[in-house]
Image (cartoon, rainbow, N blue to C red; front, side):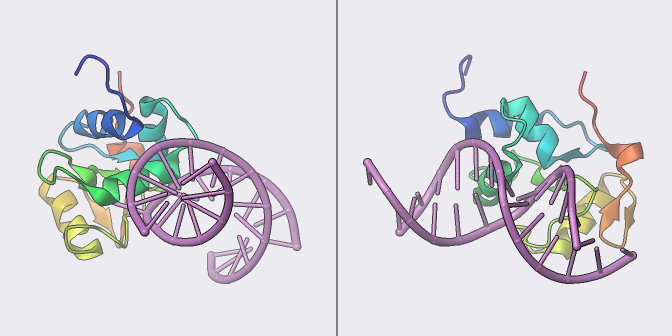
Length: 105
DNA sequence: CAACTGACTCACT
DNA sequence: TAGTGAGCCAGTT
C-alpha cells in the first residue's frame, strides 16, 4: 500500500482522492498516476472498475467536462444522476469544470 | 511474444 | 461548429 505496483492501482487512489462535490478529468488522473498522456489507459482501467463503490468513477469526466457515454453502472443517465446527487450541476451531459474541477493540492 | 482494443486528448480541415 | 486523423498508454487476447 505504500508502493502501488501497477499503474491501475495509482489510478484508483487518485480517483478516490476526489472530494465529494468535485470532479476530475481522465487527463488529471493520468498525471496523478504518473503518466500525463495515459488518459486512454485511465479510461480503460476505470471501465473495468474492480471496486464499484470504492471508486467514484462518476466524478471522473473527460477533459471538456463531458460525461462518459459508456458508464459502467448504467450509462450516461446514471452518471448524470450521481453528479446531481453530489450537488454538481450537469448541463445536458456536461459539467462546469471551471467550478467543480478538483485542482488537487 | 506480438497485435488489438478502448470511459482519451489534441490538432487540423 | 462539426468531423476526421494521428498519438499516447495500459490491459487483454
